[in-house]
Structures are given as structure tokens and as C-alpha cells.
Image (tube, rainbow, N blue to C red; front, side, top):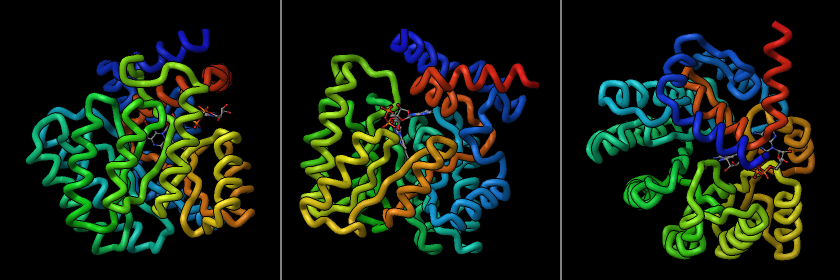
Length: 305
Ligand code: FAD
């Protein structure tokens, strides 16, 4: 049943009609729990609040699968505005970007132009940028673009998904770039030909790549709400004398906030992924897919209105 619901929400996450409707009607359906706001100003206020609690942030201007150049360029402008706000307000925050919102599916020229504009502003403002990893179909090209940009800018990282079979090899291959990587389980619907279908195998692979990347001496962001993975990371770091300055934990805004505070109190860098913007639908559907209990939460919220 859980798997069925997961598939259902992942299917809905790519529906273009609902995406448009969601944009038109604003932050509804309980999405507010996971989205910091619709504007830069609203998001800055949320980040200030997080920073005051010793939580760092990585901000994402919501949106994905954009197929016209004008919109892709406008989306780059919104990320640029956010990076400038981070610099101006001296926030403890980084930026995350999804390249399908910046022209990835239009042409290499459009996406590279937008990425370089974002990276130039990020460099000027001393802001680190992470390229989110999207679906499998786009994985290789995302890594190719990452490698190209990493040779031009030092303030860039990307994401590796534990559910893919290819991941171990990618970690080995990327090591020559000494990359700062965010490691995650993976949030998209992928076929068993390319990704582990069983959670236990994904968890095993997650632990394997955490070990590899940390032992390679690279900065590691473990992005997970799974206590098993978090405790494993803590113990592995301790047993191998890996300092707290070489790794961090990351979680999504609105998910397990008490655990976020607890990890920060224990002296770990705890970074919260803070999405903002009107294009929240796909992101929200993937959060529902991750945890069917969220659906009950949303329904309760709707009934209260
Ligand atoms: P799970 O086993 O899914 O969850 C462990 C426990 O955490 C659950 O039992 C539940 O208690 C809690 N939990 C998990 N998800 C939710 C939720 N939605 N609502 C409420 N409780 C929840 N994926 C990508 O494919 N590409 C990316 O670039 C990417 N970036 C990410 C950045 C950050 C900072 C984080 C935290 C995740 C990111 N993800 C990304 C998503 C990731 O791949 C997983 O889908 C997501 O983190 C759920 O996996 P988990 O490790 O938390 O473990």
C-alpha cells in the first residue's frame, strides 16, 4: 500500500496541469509546512529565524522542468536575487539549484549561461552553490556540467543519490575533484534497472558511500532524516577521527525540526534546505510520496479551513 501511494504521488509530481494550478492558487494544500514563502523577503525572514537557532540554510528557488528560455532566464534571476540577499543580509546560507529550471532541457548553451551567471554572483557574495540531482535520465549530464563548472569555480558542489546502482562508481570518479557532495537516498521514481528497489539496499549503499567519501577526506553533507543513517555517520566519524568540520547534516524545512535543533546543540553543522517560490507543487508531491502520514496531516489541515 505504502509503495502504491509513493508511486501515485511521484506520478502526480510531474503533472503539468496541476503544477500550473498550484502556481495560480498560491501556497495551499498544506504546502506551507514545507515551503518557507513565495518571495525572497519571506524566505530571508525564515532563514534569519533558523540562523538565530544556530541552524544553517541552503535555499532553493522552487521550480523544475522549464521548457522556455525566457522563463529559464527569469528563474536564474530569482536565484541571483536570493544570493545577493544572502550576501547583503550576511545570512548563514548557501544556495541550491535545480538545472531543469534553468534551461537544462532547452540547450546546453542556455543552462551553462544561467549557471555561470549564478556562479559569478555566488562567487562575488561568497556563497556556496549545490546543484541538486534530479531524475536518472539527467544524472550523467548533471555530473558533466558539475565537473566543467568545478574547474571554473571552487564554490560549487552537487548531490549523489544512494538508490542508484552507478553511485559507488561516481563517488570513485569524482574523487579527483575533491568535491563537496551532498549524499541523499534519492527522491524520484526510478526503474529497478537503474536503482535499488528495496529500502534496505538503498540504506546499505548510503552507508557505503558515506564511508568512501569521508575516508577520501572530502567534505560530506549527509542529507537524511533517518536516525539509522545519522547515528551511523556520527559513529563512523568518531571511530575514524574525522573532525566535525569535515561533515554536516542536512534536513528539509518543516521535517523533524526538533531533531535539527538537537544535532546543532550537539555541535554538528546542521543545514536546513529552505525552498521558496510559487512553483511548489512537484517538490510538495515528492514530500508526500516520502511519507504517507503527511497526507493525513494535509487532509486534517484542509478540514480545519
Ligand atoms: P527515509 O527513510 O525516507 O525517512 C526516514 C524518516 O524520516 C521517516 O521514517 C520519517 O520519520 C522522516 N521523513 C522522511 N521524509 C519525510 C517527509 N517527507 N515528511 C515527514 N517525515 C519524513 N533527493 C534527490 O533526489 N535529489 C536532491 O538533490 C535531494 N536533495 C535533498 C536535500 C536535502 C537537504 C534533503 C534532506 C533531502 C534531499 N533529497 C534529494 C531527498 C532525499 O533523496 C530523500 O527523498 C529524503 O531525504 C527522504 O529520505 P531520508 O534519508 O530522510 O530517509
